[in-house]
Image (cartoon, rainbow, N blue to C red; front, side):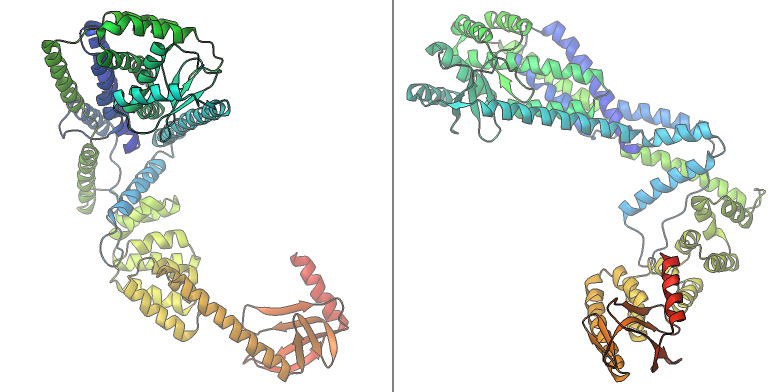
Length: 593
């Protein structure tokens, strides 16, 4: 299973345990502890669900290690994996090596289970199940964002800014009492179902109507201002991201609903704390009046509103009527509970990356023992036989493992075979298993360069240091080998320099070619060729021993000519093409098309 998904599942399980604990505690202590504490304590659970960190020793780590150990003992040992690539200049970057390790591990699994299709398919699904999880999470998040954007566009389309100075003054007074200095907009939209606040950076309180009693107006805006001051919209979106990532965990969805309810309960408590418990009855009437307001568009998950559904309103009214400041004993109890939740989150923990590395190290140690036994002769197969078997099975990962264990003569035989066959895949695997200082590496690099085997030389260049690449580039520049120059400039990340050289070469080559044609009696006017004052219909110039030619056709031309070159590639004559030669050329072109 993918290590990232394994860690993430442990986060979901540990978070689920905390959710169950809090839900149980809520049933026991619902009316005894602060509603604000019941709201904010969920942050500890969210952090447990989102952050893959924990102490080295924890419950989840021990559990997963026990499972890994059981699986490790049940699964047959795989062949030893290849040590880090022998790339000149030292060890490869840790990130590249980790990626290579995962790739080889998956490839080995595929090869060793190829004989059992059902097991192979099952292993493939297990190794890639994280893609389904991630895809579902992205779809859910995009869906929520899209719905929210549509909701905001709908609300903004029907907004009417409030210009009543009296209402704006009351809003300013409420903002001052709530401790908010940032300017706050006040707008009307008769389509909303209840007062709400929208906007992260430009907050706006939206009212269904301006016809609101003074006392109700004050309670309403104070409620929404407290939502804004506490950044409840950001809190809600953090919860939604958590729900999307843990979409498969029903406890997380249950937590989301509990946080939505706790948000309103805690805001009610904050309002009454500022206004005093003596105003609880009036505040409750404000909630009832807000619930009675008629609106066609219900609130969205990204907004915070004054009222909710009827069942939630009933619970809120009950909590408001029972509101009173908590005693010192209750405060001490909530402090103790907070500490317990934090310690519990740490104790439950997550599956640590170190555990995965530890299990892998144990597997590697066992594999080392297996290969040591082979080396001492206890295995019935030697490395040469293994290499032959893996090559016939077309198993690159397994061949890559055994190739470095062959002696130098055997390595040379395999490299010569791959070179002669033009087998770039196995040649690449074998080259990566060579010591960069090996005479084989240098010999095959010289051979590929001399024979202009660009694909094979490129494979060798991948394992060269920059200093060696610079030496080969100097040689390619001196020899005028443009194909190898292109490869080496690219390996050195200097492709722009090659483009400039190529442009300069093409210009010089064009000028030289034009001068050669003029000396032979052929002139050019743009793409039109003239010979002895006649416009050319077919112009053909084939360079001997080279892989390119010049062919130009102009239907308006009256003569067909070809350039005759000697073995030294110099123009020796210009000849008229016979009708048979022209027809043969056209037929060849038609066959090629």
